[in-house]
Length: 209
Image 1 (cartoon, rainbow, N blue to C red):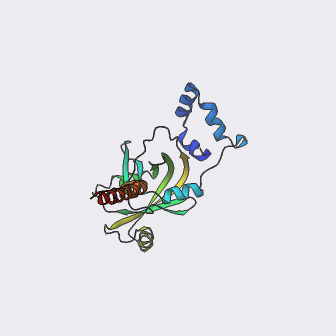
Image 2: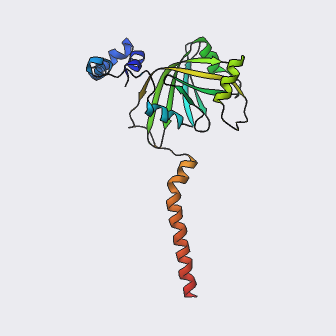
Image 3: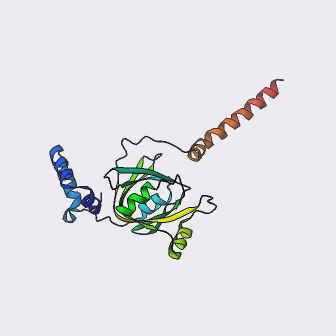
């Protein structure tokens, strides 16, 4: 865990609960640079590769009423792009036109992302501040840069997320799940083996005729 993530997430109330339940000493060590804590407010190679391989993520924002809102964003791998060591972005496609996340972020730009890799039971949490770019020529150029080739749904804006901290989560309670593409890859050798066995069975049957 990075110090920057802990600084943002570990409020006095959170620290009180950590103290009460016996985990405060562990997290105190992670927050202190003299005890080996890592700053971690920029994206390293592992984080960049993980982000680039995702075909979806969950994004949380908070509205003016104080209620949190979580939205799933999906697309082909690479639709969420790493622009530099502290910035990621995506082209925001036209959807159901409720604009809940957009309205929330224009009021309070703080955002939390969950990026999941279910087959490996990995989860990357990102805290950052969103910047919405639309209407002007610079925004159009950014939208074009972030757009996925052959995407038919119009992109209405570009969303940049300036990373302020991140954390890799424990794998223990993440249930492995697989996409059709991942299953085909995993089952490929088995399917080939079945084909060979069927061919062998057909050959043996032919010899007995």
